[in-house]
Every structure is written in structure tokens, then in C-alpha cells.
Image (cartoon, rainbow, N blue to C red; front, side, top):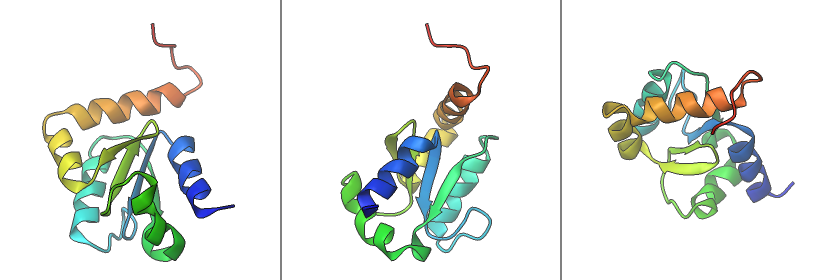
Length: 114
């Protein structure tokens, strides 16, 4: 599978995914650490991809959504942004709402939106 297809699959198959340096439990840069903390603060599970263990993703993710830096947070298949945008959304409550809605929509008993 092509690297852009693998990235696309991770984005589309997970309601919330962060491409980061390291893991949420062991981040390898301050920006990834703060982003993971904000996502964990939303109280829902989220997927992650450690770009340091996959050189192809590390090299090609910036051209996937035309965003040059890491981390990158995607909710419902859309790029939300990096660390600064994620933290701003967390501080004003938007991130918690977006994450909870995205995760709830994937649960079997989720009500369809009107």
C-alpha cells in the first residue's frame, strides 16, 4: 500500500487520530506531549501514529494535508491542526465537544444526526 493511502486509511478509519513524535504515554517532543495531553483531557480514546517509527509517514505526512509540522490532529477525517490550534480548542471547550461527538458517532448505539 502506498504511504499516502496508509495515511488516508488512518485518518478515515479513526474518529480521532494524532500523528505525533512518540506515543501519548511517551511523547518525544514538547508539542506532541501537549497535544496528547489535550486529547487525553477530552476523556475519550483516540488513535495515534508515531511518525518516528515510520520514516515514510514522517516524510510524506506534510504533503497529505499541506501542513508542514508535527503533530497533526484529525477529527472525522479533517485536519484540525497542530499543537497551538489543538490547545486553543481545548481551552475554549471546542476540542472536547468535537472529540466526544466524533467518538459517539462511531458507537453502535449512536443516534443518527437530524
